[in-house]
Image (cartoon, rainbow, N blue to C red; front, side):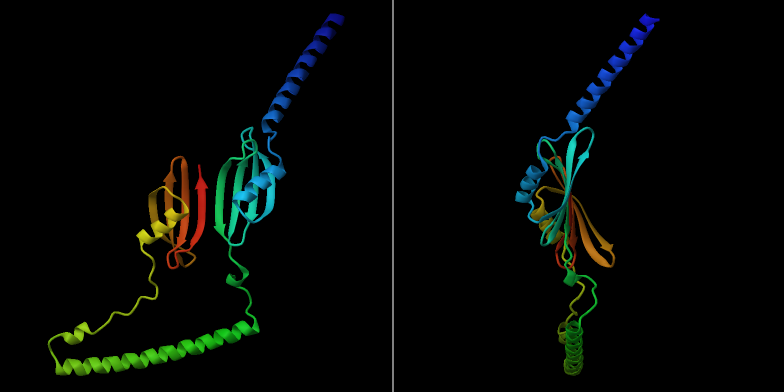
Length: 224
């Protein structure tokens, strides 16, 4: 009986030692070399702004810091290796300021918009009158001269919804992330025309969204 009891106690001891060894081994793998302050200092040098969130996560037995940074014009979401400080993933977005959001207009803003509407209406009236005068001149010229010169005097109206071409959008994207463009697509998002451009550079791949009217970079995501 005593012999069986001794063997049972021995087995329990071995299992306990192995369990503790596995726990400490797993813990040592996920324990980061760099502290939170060191990560903040490292990232702040590369991405200016306020670090609004920082968390230590376990990713396949690897210590990974997840950060969120809000700058003046950009918002960054990063994953950083807790041992080497290497940036594993970066997501960048353009920050929409309060003046660009659909906020309730103040009295001054309403007055300014009313003034703008009046000015626009006056310009439209002036344009309409000018168009009428041009039409009359064109008609008179056609009556006097039938050699086709009247047709050459007509001008195509300027397209107010003109967008930048693919080459210009590509150049803007390459200025943000150098590499080889693999795909360019013109798409509409919430009534807004955007270029979606994918670029490869070595093992990195970037997806960039550009406003098709203004050329503004709206979103840039980099994956390895």
